[in-house]
Length: 337
Image (tube, rainbow, N blue to C red; front, side, top):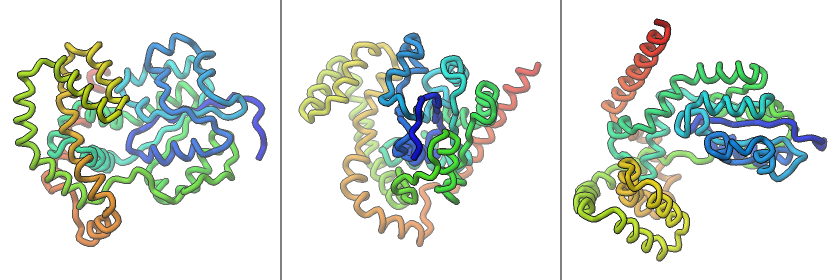
């Protein structure tokens, strides 16, 4: 394997979420000629003011191709996509940009299943009303425009678009092309190339989680009603003590940050209120009981043709995508006039 002499190749895998992101990130991380950095948040925060030399110092090895992966960069979650990609182009104008995509309806299925596994949104209608989810879908609807924007800033040969269907059909060929695009040894084969990663649970597992969650809703409503009478600082202090007992320092740090900076933010307060109950299905049902039975449940789901989506849900997906597309077209006409 040839030794690289200079880290002149910078790559950015900018998304999209739920488009084989874990698989692609692991493939980048395993390559010995790639110095992989995961979610530095450099281009979406105050760190950007430190400049290129500071960003370059984050990487551990000067002799390899440098690649950062953050599937959220293509969305408007951190800041506007235009601002993010403009910052990257100004600091690293010769960067290689990697974007992954998938069918919109397929993405909706996968995204909802993922959040349901984590204990969120037992109702598909509530999921469609989820504001962050709408932001992601809006980004997905604008994917062609965002790809074109990247091609204009970085030149078309420096932008690689990967479709999930191509990975399903021939993953080794996709990874070989990815390595060639970055200028590293394309004959390297990452481990477990044929193994699926971060796969959503089978439909039977998701249905059990959904019904478990629905059964807990009366308790959750009562708990939230009672908690409204308790001042937020008291609740934060109690949960800090609870997390300390569990030795979960990450949650303690997060709660301290929320307590110091966001006490007047209704969205953050709602997030804190929702945290414990939202993870119940994941903690008490999926991981201890359903996860060990996943191979059996997956086989049964396939043989029985079970789906977590009802006909009503399918109609809701079609309606939702149509409305977003109409909204996009209306915005385009408005810009023209």
